Picture (cartoon, helix red, strand yellow):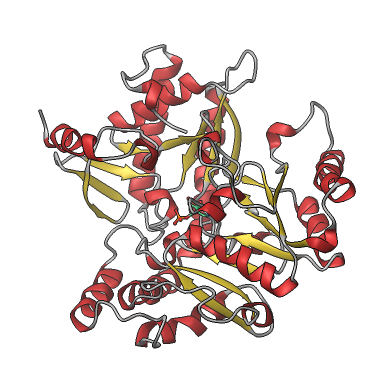
Length: 445
Ligand SMILES: Cc1ncc(COP(=O)(O)O)c(C=O)c1O
């Protein structure tokens, strides 16, 4: 028995199955750049970036030094009572990066989930209205509020209701809802009609505080809403005094080849949530919004003892330095184009590759049954498991979408090696050489 197995057996009796979507039986010990190493010493090229929370890679020296230096100075003093040095410097720097014109302000949190809870709180407080609209396919987090906003897995509402009142879900305009032969405009019109239906039948717009959207859904399959749809809901929000809020937890911090995914649409949010890669994976999040919205709640309406902690904010300052100094946003855009070409070339050879969506170094690749065009969950599991065996970590979304989100610092050689591994897995699947791993039934979303 190796150390991976030994430690997993050690953990198993003490660990809730609600707390992990399972993939491979490894225990990760260390990471450097785009490579992670397990406790048995196996190296993997990471194509997941710790769920898009390490855009600057693992153990970036500048981030490590910032954390180490700060740990020696002060590990914690709560920003809930006194400003601390790093967070006081970071607040205006981060707010300035937000794509919101005019005065803006922020509040700290510990997770993307609580940043989305903050969107509920601040939008209700500012508008004096109770209802929030979010989208099917969304993952907004795991607190009661953010889990209520989500709609990507039945396990997120199964057995735990009642959920937060005042949340209404409308369909996200993802390509799987598209009818055969439907034009882009007809699709947008149909999806916008579905969006408006609640407002026309039971949801008074004047009682709606916010529309919250992932402009590019992450866990929903890496899928971008059509530009015209976004413009229509944006206009609808503004025409009706509803705040337009975006979740940038997964797709922000350079992931899409821009600082923020909403910048791909040229629209300005009223409120936005940020987390994950903000502090290179240290637990720091923020809700950022127009100042008058952020002034609508009084203390202690949204504070946490450890939010804006000295170490996490030091890590965030260093993370922003790295993204700027190493031009990671440009790199994301450039490598994303290369990855898109790779997957398109593979699709010429392998008809089980369906739709390819790539926005920066950030892709969702559908695996389908070539005969029917329908999702092929088994083929997807075989591919990701083969990729794992060959030394890279990739996971699936929605049962049949390859989630391709390497750290933005991945080297050219590592990326080429990852392509070679993926090509080998595709080749093996096409040759009928792959079977399902023993734990296939418990793997994935
Ligand atoms: C878009 C989005 N929002 C919010 C969250 C929740 O973030 P956290 O897990 O840090 O609470 C996630 C996590 O996957 C996410 O992808």
